[in-house]
Image (cartoon, rainbow, N blue to C red; front, side, top):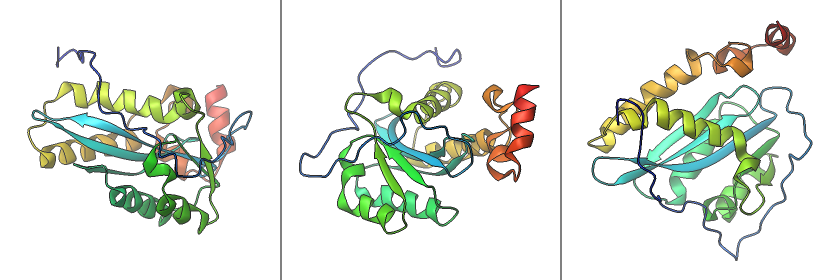
Length: 202
């Protein structure tokens, strides 16, 4: 089953629990055309299975290029590893909008203040609407079927090493049909989106 990328269907940890005391921001992306890098970033958390237990993976993806701007693994859901991931991403560029679900990590004052202090607009999915964060959900599916389900990580160190190799491959080598068979890095760092649109059309 591992060699074929088949995994049993079982419930994982609920990573989108809402804190009712935190402010919820509206979803800003309905009918919005995302037409350049750093227009919209999506952030989300998923769990990564280990041989004994699991870890939590957070990633920030640029929706226009599918480029993974920043990611991190941790053994707990403490807010610190989310903030560190966001800070590393913001050291590279600043998006106009950051989209997330309504999980307590993303509604926490520490997280929202970090974005507001850098003039990033905050967008949050509607309750129970995973499709509002579709590009990040597609990233999780790709990572799990192409990497995680094919391996059995015996330690956090092995998981980090393998996922680092995979994200390097994903960003810099994996061609995307939706990007005109460019890599995410080529699109993200391209100075000309016109050339990319021409290639997609052809």
